[in-house]
Length: 338
Ligand SMILES: N[C@@H](CCC(=O)N[C@@H](CS)C(=O)NCC(=O)O)C(=O)O
Image (cartoon, rainbow, N blue to C red; front, side):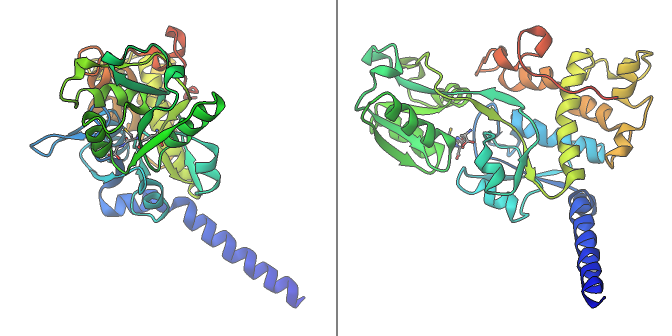
């Protein structure tokens, strides 16, 4: 009997604490009046602050989309610049609400750190940059090369795997920030710079003579990049996940920041569910039914966000490739809102 009472007590405490954990983040964000979003310290195209202190980039826009979904205002977000080494601990410690920082989804990062990746906002892969003058065509010709690489990344692990599995000798020049890696490479302290391919294009622009450097065709890894949250708050996981899915679904349905006013008048059932003129989907995740309309109005659909930050009219000019929608040759795919 007494054992039963103790057990009931333990169960009650567990239920109360897990109910608390499961709704904590949104309540805290709302009480604070802003979202705290972890981003890269400086990576053009993804997360970059200009001389006037204005942030821009693909990952920054995801933070703004989340703020728009929650508050109806994309500016209710504080961006916390984090190094590769510090990012996951900052999330675990509750210093940020969400991490949107070119982070690769791996099994270990979820299981060891108690985190959840909500989706893949950008499919990337690791590559190599070398001086054009050395005239090589493949990473398999890099036996014995000195390679500049950053700590706390999947990059450094993939690099070791690639050289070991091809029986090649490797000398690493490790640094803890991109700035240092780029400076080391530019100064000739290493022959090769390795990172996610999207970043190599960005980093090449920072070299003293970008045209003197080539990116080799080899892609040695899968780098599914996406937003990360703590794994103990299902409501928050759903919010962050569906913000990403709403951006993809909006593009698929042809709803964008220019025609969002017309979309609100649309009679198409799928558009109506997205923009909240039918159904109750926003309220069911703790937001308002205008959540997706607010995202699209403030930051655009997925395609608009991609083009604005990374697309053909930007200095990076990265092709959509795998990040094209699934019905246009890529693998970006979102479950339906219904
Ligand atoms: N996607 C990889 C690499 C992410 C990463 O941090 N890459 C470096 C190399 S470019 C970076 O963004 N550094 C920026 C910085 O620390 O300032 C991961 O999640 O580990």
